[in-house]
Image (cartoon, rainbow, N blue to C red; front, side):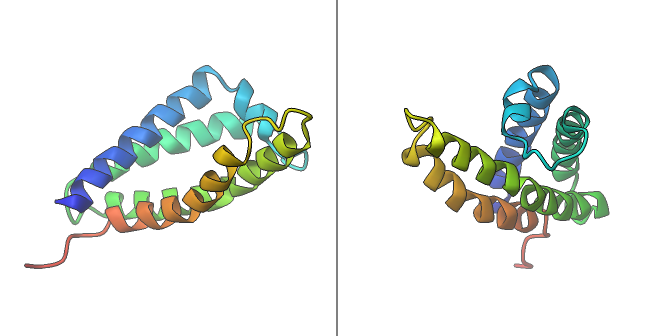
Length: 128
């Protein structure tokens, strides 16, 4: 039951994040590391990946697409971690500290949890 609820919560989170990436890419462009090629295209594609991953997560139990979505979103969260680190560094360099440690430290801790959660919620529940 918990796995199912968390799967739907994570799917809703990724769906919303994906839509925001598409309709308001500016905040994501601002935190994209300078070494990322074609940052606008990358931000748009990450939004599409989030939306497709969310759709995949809500597929029925034992659906190969659901398992693939879990792996994809886990890898996605790993790949965008540099942008979160870049955001942290940029904010801490600002005179006002940006969003501050109260935002960034939990965000850094949450990233591996999100990676694991994407994989875990996409698995079949254990047999009873």
